[in-house]
Image 1 (tube, rainbow over the protein chains, first blue to last red):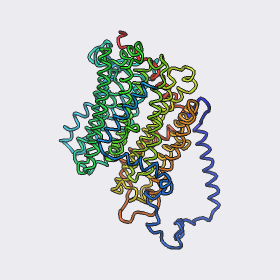
Image 2 (cartoon, helix red, strand yellow):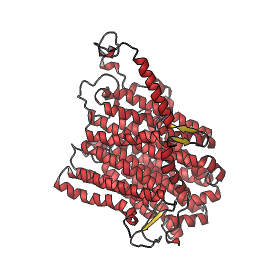
Image 3 (tube, each protein chain N blue to C red):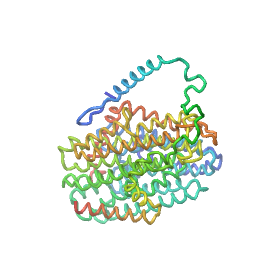
Image 4 (cartoon, chains in turn orange, brown):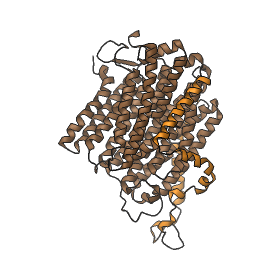
Length: 110
Length: 514
């Protein structure tokens, strides 16, 4: 079968999954068709609700502010990691030489 | 000799001829180089397809082409082509063609288009040469051609100081990795007096892992990992990817995969005999460690980026980690026939399947990032919003790429990741768990890009329009391939991947049977 792969412990069939997705999409469409016809085309229909006002541009959260909590929690991980990415070519070379030395050590002592 | 016998050298010669002709054609018309270079790339892609039919239709014995002689001999410039070589050439052929068409409109406002397309053709020559050669020194020469041409492309936007800086960083790193490679080749030549990969492999297998051979393999792993952008050798990659104009980031990614080719060729074809006869798992573990570091550090660094191309560059590093993890497990069990049959081959299959999948969806995502820059004039995600209102096709293409890279079923990314998860789990469950966690972070990162750039109110300060049709067409080629690979992973695995894995595990015959 073209859509089937065997992983050694299990199998995966993409075509079956795609058929299931299509069936689910049809069911969703059927449920949606029971709604009020033309609601989205009415005045302000389909627009996000913002207390009756026009949605201001500032309501959109900027990329830098997304996952703020996660990044704040992981600060102790990120601070040294980002700090190592200095952009300085000398540091790049140092990392290359250090890594090469590490690979050599592993090759000899592992 | 028939035309089919000359195919191996024609694959390299056609884009090379194109590279020489493009500046001359550029004198006649500004727009002519873009069409002629695409034609040269299309012809070479066709030649790769013909080669694929010949190699995949054969009995698995590599095709040997000796330059300047009708008899195969290991002491001339030799091309030795098996299914793995063709597999990598197919990736470059497809990606370079899509990038070339995409660049028609993207480079419209730039001068020096003849130089731009010449450099694209030279990158392709370097990558084809690396994947088709049977000679280690030629591999070095093609490695350098590819690296120098890529440096030129990174510096192409000469009005930006950042482009020069990125090109300088990449060039310095490429020079260092080139020196490591040259040093490794010199060490091998001083021991065995030959440069042919098959002959060298025979000598290395007979000698085993002498201290000098360990140094050689360490140098080869290190320098090819630098070319592939594996952590902690990834430092200049985000600069080079983000400063490359438009589709060049995609070409950059495909050319970096030639580094993976070198790494796998060195580990299997060159040193595979010695590794399996001595049951030496250290090599596999080194590749696995590089893979895990690349996966995890790549994706966590991507999460904090606000430059869309830089973010995608870190994802490229992260996806390289998956490939290294899968193939690394295969290298680690080279000396254990039972483990190789149980999960080793599946791990390598997963790694190689992920290589071609990564080229497709990462290539597409870089092209969508180029489209976002084309439409907004910025790469800063903080300055984008609501692009989905006016760029519906790009939005849809981005979603397809994001779903695939995050490994959401039924995408092609899911198929290759599933192979990696399940096979690696049998080797070491912790590594598999890390790989799955990285997929979650990948999804989180692309949700961030989708939300911040495509959703929300329209940008009022800029008039956003959908990108021109040639850019859409370039992206559509990759989308079509992603959809086909997603629906028919079994077909891809059986026809493309499994023969490539068998070729990797098989020793190369010596040209002329010396």
